[in-house]
Image 1 (cartoon, rainbow, N blue to C red):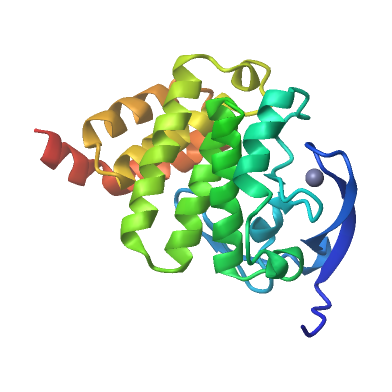
Image 2 (image 1 turned 90 degrees about the vertical axis):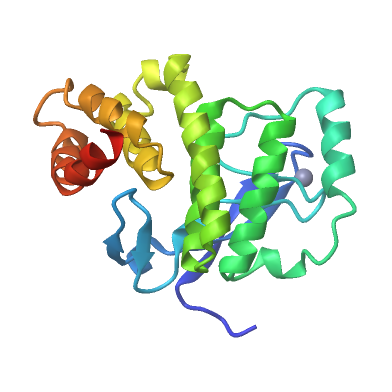
Length: 228
Ligand SMILES: [Zn+2]
């Protein structure tokens, strides 16, 4: 494979077998955002760093993200061994990745996260990335399926007041904005209005409230018409 000057390799430790390996990443000075969709889906002029948010250990084939906890229980290790150890055709996942590679890894990370019973606030962004990777591929059906999964996980995390929302490591106004936007995109308009109402209770200067006001003024007519 030709060397891509925008990619470098950094050390990572596997959360399952604890061995070290090299994982590819986009150099920060090569990250150039072109634009974002209203649900924050980014488009990059050069390489897409989202494809490298998912790690695969070359020793045990465990797939994970920065948000997964270290795996300590033997029971969990056994489940993951069955899932990943015999996985074939993984060679191309250790270097520069295309959208299909990123999509495959994101889906594997979701399976791993579900097996480990990771919380909804950790699974929601993975579902969102799977939806976006499908959007890049113009696969509308799969995009919509995973937007719905992302919505369900964000909603569960919000309703259960997940710790990461409480301690503000995931901003609450971001979660509410995303719920408003995703409910619109999946066509559950009745929820869209109430999520935007919920969003506008946050301080006016909040970035997501400002973003939400613009968005609401664009779509309110459509929603009001349908939900009458
Ligand atoms: Zn490993």
